[in-house]
Length: 257
Image (cartoon, rainbow, N blue to C red; front, side):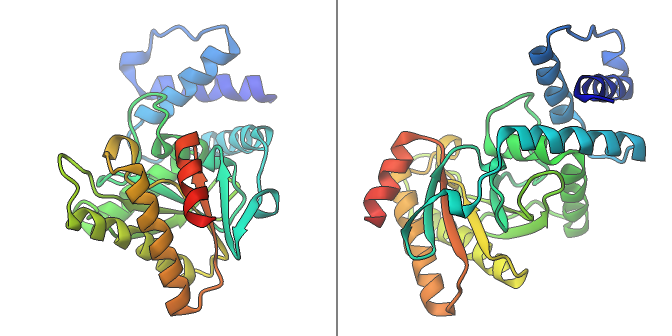
């Protein structure tokens, strides 16, 4: 099968899983088909599926991810020793681990085609990631507390691992507890990365955006925590600050000048 045939196969299989979608017309446009496939993957609850679906999905996503272009630390600007800034799509990064800003459910974003990092990572990793996260949560027996971290394989992403952390949600005034929890997110991610032999880690801007942590203060905590961790532990892990907005890039450049 070529990519078009694989995409249609995946859409048809996912539609058949959901009786309410049985009469849905598959659009002719390639772009609309891509949106539909992503939406169906986003709303699908964690659950097993047959090996043929997984094989076709993996072949399809590996090509999609390759076409987006893979980026390595050698393609980035090293601002300080072992510290980099890179602006763009975190799912393109071929590094040891990328950090996912997760919610307490830990199974990804269920809003169709939402442009958050959690949604993007789960979309381009494949449905196995949601299933694995659900298994971890079932075994844990409670929602993931803020400030901790879990690690999974990356499945179809170019990175080796995905590290999932739940940042604090700021509603109203920023408090010392919010700051301590955000610091714990960075420290927990670094610790679990080192425990798993990860040589490079890309951090998104944890807790900013819809979690409402002020961007500048969040960046200050990130830089301070990472530098302190590396000094105290002697860790040689390479750290990439992955930003998506011009504002965040400017903040990190100012802090690391």
